[in-house]
Image (cartoon, rainbow, N blue to C red; front, side):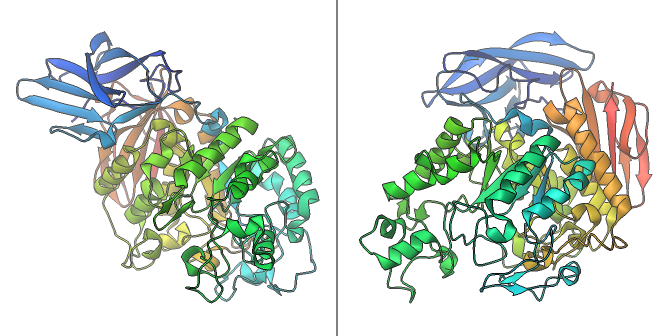
Length: 599
């Protein structure tokens, strides 16, 4: 049954980033046949609910458009809509339509602050683990490292440990820029590039320079010049929660207890090494932001870490913040919001067009309310439910669900409910500025999750490229590379022997990337779910001038989509199953997808 719909896209909100005092028009699409006597908005002003009636502004053959104008007096305005009448009391909030009272936690949210960088809307990122993507040649390794064979590591890295280096570097990335731009990529997200004592580099020894093993700052500037010329943005990875045990700050702190650096850490007798470490890993001492000097060096000072790298000199287009949810928190100490907001202010001052995206472990909604992270790595609200729906080897991926049990196997209906629940807790602008992904350096590879099934992988990739957010492909996913998680997922790419590359799948990914970057409905469109069955789901992406419908099937099934009820018919098949008319009915024999332009 069709129901009233509203989201934060331009079709429904006249200005998603208003100034205080500005009037904003909010619109609701109401299907004809949905009967009510009163349409009311409930919104907050200074923490107290206010109400106003909506009025009908226009109608089409299948819908009525109702709207209301409200003045924005606070930086954050939660709101929802009520449709009431005889035996009717329906609330419409960001999670959907409810026939019972609801809590404000899932209200729509309008944020009167500068919004996310607009270039994100047509961006597709490629995640690179620097040691494993491409190498410019042999190099002398530091004393902590062991040489690992590049070709062997393209098959599996199960036997490799944190001190094993295969020799990837930034010049290698620069030499493969043509490969990335041919795929359609216009953004690279690097896991850390700072000097460290591991191949993952989350244990930095300084935040000031690029690791010499990767080519140092000279290689960074060379890559940035080439990337600028190719139209590719570069985003870095920063551990605001911790540094490495060999970091220059820790070395100074241990050698001089009276130094400013000594206050950068939490000291304790609980561990033999004498300091608090992230998850009790000796190699990762936790940072103490009670130190004003640390705040100055990390984000407040003119040459602070945050500001330095997004400055015009170094030219990063943003930061991904590692374990952002834990930054500034330890027991009864909670400076998280102060640090998060300070990082955002620093970036807004130096590079207001830079992206701030965080690993937000449990999808803390308040972190995404407008003054902190632009978005999150959307594990909980996209990747995890999608892999649970597509997964056919439930024992494989329980760990990355964050639970000590096997990963769930869910239906399409449960999948949509999960996405609605998480997306309904944050502003629309945070959803579209969040990174969406199928896997990463921390998870099993998607090709392994689906037991090698290219059809399921293609269906999931189609969803990632057509869903609100910033798609991010983990290096080699487009080639069908597998891996059971962590080290084994961080395999090298064999550039010399391409016999095991899934070229058919790479061609599909290339086509999908092109759609994501060029179709107006995928760049600016809202999101309306129109089907959520056990084995397939469907959703609309719409602007005022363009509309696309996407159908994703996880299994063999019969599909029946009535587009006439929404006032549409298929104008063109853009990808996947061919269809025409306004009532496509067809059967698929395996996981499948369809992307249709509508008229």
